[in-house]
Length: 293
Image (cartoon, rainbow, N blue to C red; front, side, top):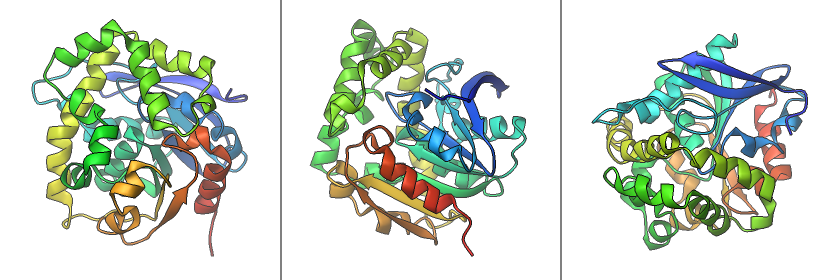
């Protein structure tokens, strides 16, 4: 995996961000979701590296990145904080402007980055999400039952931490199996990478803190920004054609409430599009990121 990519660990904002870099050309940052790490892009990143400098990182609290102490208000794990980490990583690598593509939690970091750092983000791709405040405000039965982690992981400390620590592989495999259309698309060696990260109590706590921040700080900031701040760059929206994002929301209409230049469509596969349908994700991202007259 990630042949011809180099690994890095970059200190930022009181923690360290782990990732890989490869290719050459205009920079694009790839951000992962839960329960994954940057490894989720292993089928997509090499193809994009043919025309772009590709940076794939682990979000704060995930994978090989740091798990700094949290705070009573959960600010160290708010998406604004995670977005700032990634902007600092790209600046350290020499990129003051870049495109960003995120899946799931990584997409939430990516759109917050576009709102908070508009001068840095030139293009935004979000995979299988609508914004956090819209998710909370408009969720229906199917979404709430399918993506129970939103409430479970946000429960008060130490309940979810204690339960997850007792069986991290059960949690990770359940998410991968129940949210995918083809569980075999995520093979045992990749699952092992994700499960290994969840074996750390520090990682478990950090990820729970991220969900607590989502239900409080992230939600409040979205509600404050909606209608008052716009995403200025072009936005590509891709989602699982049979999943809860497409059936529970109108993704394009929702994102057009946040940005003026929005395009996208549903794709076959499952929630984990970069792993379950890498060929079409590559095609869509290549077309979106290519220079257009």
